[in-house]
Length: 167
Image (cartoon, rainbow, N blue to C red; front, side, top):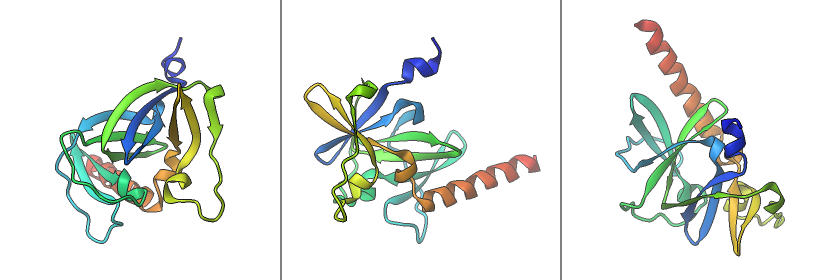
């Protein structure tokens, strides 16, 4: 069995506000404790800044702010989920990690369309996972990471490559 097979239906779940969200584990590089963030001037409010993760500079997005929820103070439960999607590596600040769950494809419903009044959170949802009596909103990294993050990550990746060429 390949590593992909063992991760196929697994999701890292986390809490934001009163809802629980899930990200396919295949996108998750690691989960780290909250650390100091260097702010970026004139970036969207939800892009909190940059962190240095073992020499690699990674942009960090606050999930609550991305969902247009009220900001809350960071605590010792706050952590950063470092995800990789296509060529992007981004940190997602979340209130707290819940668990890793298995959600088979037959337990995933398509994302509901609420019409023109879709709230910010539902824009980023790719499906709804049923886990026992609970519901997890499954996030689509492509929708979660907007053009600002893609441009920033592209810029940072180019900086890394130019530094490596100078050595």
